[in-house]
Picture 1: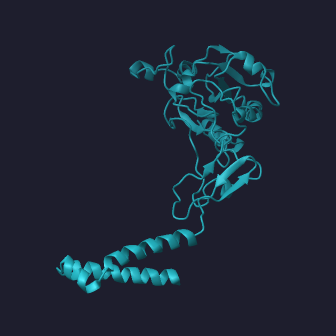
Picture 2 (picture 1 turned 90 degrees about the vertical axis):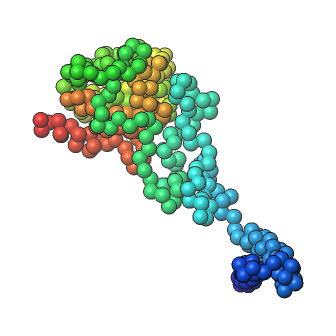
Picture 3 (picture 1 turned 180 degrees about the vertical axis):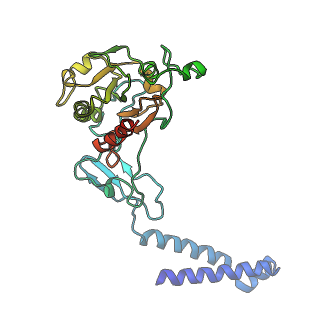
Length: 303
């Protein structure tokens, strides 16, 4: 209530000063009529601001801890500010090197005990994130040996989807057997041995290979070397990977798609080599699931 009276008084004095100026009264007459009204107005304004500062609770500094992460609550009226505080970013993949303290979650995987209301902005719905350029409904590009995108022409348009995918999926070597892309859907997953989220998706990739292997080729292109795949950290080793694994430390295909966060996957259809699904396969709320794969494969069965 006291704040309201001060605000009312401040507004009244401001209107008096403004009306005096509008009606042509000079500064001398204004000073004579109102004494030090302007100075009083400024002083009251300063007092009002101090009252607001000391009487309003600070929301911006409130934080809640989720495991080893700190999540900052948004300031009132400042809903566009980022609310994540802590090491939630993946290590840099541009150079293929892990940061010394790489975290065990991806940017969107929730720590234990967290919910979308505590980890993400409470007033903004979750959305699918893409750590790459979008190639949805576009055929993957043809690449030369250096990984540069080749121009399209009448000749390249006559290439089969399998030929296009072979040109795109550049690898320095295959970890095991070499895949055949003829007449099949192809899931290409970009991965690395140092990436915790990539290691956790191995179980799903093995499952999809076992369940959909007759119609879907699973390929994981690692940007790390053979030895690192042999000695993967966690529940799996290189010998446990049932699907096709390629090694390309130059990241040619990943760079062509603009991939800057992994895991990232593209699901390609068998007619043109076009992308029909893209994203992080294990992003909460937007996972690539058996049901999604089944619906995509069902379209091919009808042809």
